[in-house]
Length: 251
Image (spheres, rainbow, N blue to C red):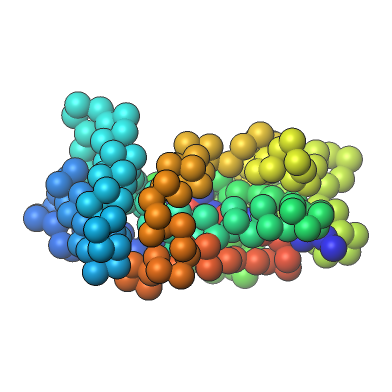
């Protein structure tokens, strides 16, 4: 059995308005993100006595970790994106890749890490968003029209050619593109899909360690069936394109 798995770099960007609208004025601060974690992601209703510890772990990782002294709205919005993208998309796809690896499925993993900068010129965040591939596959963008540049044409060529090769042959690589599948020694290695694609050894190592090692110490989090904050289903949401696991970064 052969599959490909793909993710977008900032999968949840288009939903940041939900949290941002609850903040004061045009700012989004550490306090706003912490409140979002306490009232939406890790509520006492969902986690009972474990909620306070869970909230503290989330705040330490997504709010306080490596935060500069002059951290601004952009920093905390991108951390919000990181958190929600992980919960809704990234961890489910990572988990799918690991399940397939355990069953000896040949799986090619890639992450869209390119976006056209025109789309985020007036936004406090940037990155490949959910549906980032639409203009390259279908000819329209959910984030608004933009004019293709040289990098866009190269990205489109790489994305289309690899998908077509995979559909026809079961392998997305060719003589010009080195793209090995995941394996035991490299369980999350992936192709960084850009105008100049290259392999990377590990997918979001800090985040994966946090979710799979640190948080699993929390007894309630061990059960995926009880973690459904605001219908965000951890481990359940999977994006598959032609059986290629694709990871998104969302705006």
